[in-house]
Length: 583
Image (cartoon, rainbow, N blue to C red; front, side):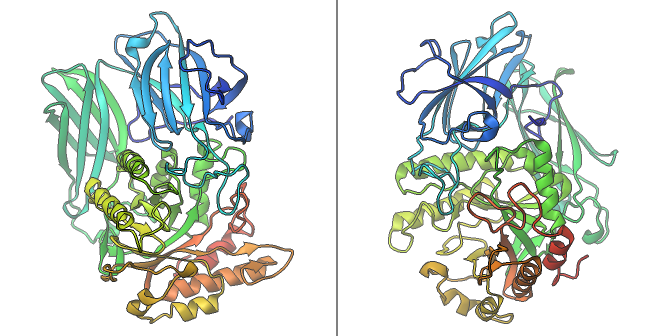
């Protein structure tokens, strides 16, 4: 198994214990067990964090299983401080016991949760953690993304992911410790907002020290007193007084400058906790019909990335696989990815921050509308935004895709209310990034008008999106599937228009159809001509090509599912950048 790096890259402590590896496991289809002391009869061994449906788990069990159990032992002596147990993601509903003491319950398959397990630990070294999972494979009213509800993957849906699918880990902290840390760049004033919350034993006179460096040069050394265990301050950086395009402090895909940070919590001079982190100075916003990065118009060249691997499904094989995916997207000439129907592993976002790749974050969809479905989505989406807020690579939030989960936007007011409410909630939770309420068609509240059109014929695209076409006429057209672009009452207000789902050319050496290419030369010609049309249209301020890699039955990737390029990367890059004037 590949090594998994520290799972929370923007709040790092030196001491931690990775609990990935072999666990005891059983399916509980008959719902025989309710607690870990019910005499669990273990039937399998599973390799965590790989889902039982995956080959890497050792099970490759793709059937319908609503209930399952996990258990493992670990050696840890109770220290003077606190011990926190973390789960990166468990799909869908989890209950956790340590030494038969219930320590946590969490609902939501894509977001992390943790528990202070100090009181449940034995004084000696041997401890046991048990996890019960409930994940109804037929439930269409929960956020599930591309997970299929049929026995075998069909159409555009893929194998299910049940149970633990991200890293499980422990860390030991003091009696009072840093619970959360959030960074907000304030580009206009050359400031970094720092929000910190402490937890644990209440203390008076808590202070925090925040140090920020760039390439070893100390930029800030600030000290604050916590009020009610919280601090919320803005840290001023020196304005270099030069043109922003040459400011080496700014983060961008071309120059991904990260600022190192160290945060120390003190009580009357004594160190209670110390973490390392990083942030960046950058801004993203909309100016009329253009997307802006660091105050300048920035055309987006995105590729749709589903984040699946053949043997590990939603879980990456390891940290190097995540780094490799970021590097491959850049090598093919893209400056960003649209992460489709997946809240990606934080380590992917770390590599996107470090190597310089923009990320659109999209909420996995439910496929049935109900008050419960929306409540579930609101809770999990809120947790996702809280988790990923500080990553500079994340530039757009997308709560809904192609009206999935809200299929009757034209006729049912409640469906429209859901999209508008999630748009405004997202803007409330994060006022620093644009939000697309419903990407693809039937737009209402949105900062960017996203169009999904996978017509692979460059001539038809040229006619449909003429270089000097008028947005007003475009809005009146129906999209593929007969969908309208905007809902009544929400005319185009001058927002940027982007082709956020285009291409999808299949490389198939067995024949040649309109959407297929039977040799590398035909593929690259078709690919370049298609992107030339999109890039040269003054109507668009960006696009997203579909897709990064083959994903199960969808074979329209630029790469095979194992990430082998279908043609030389330098030729893909040249075609991607043909209209951009970049090397």
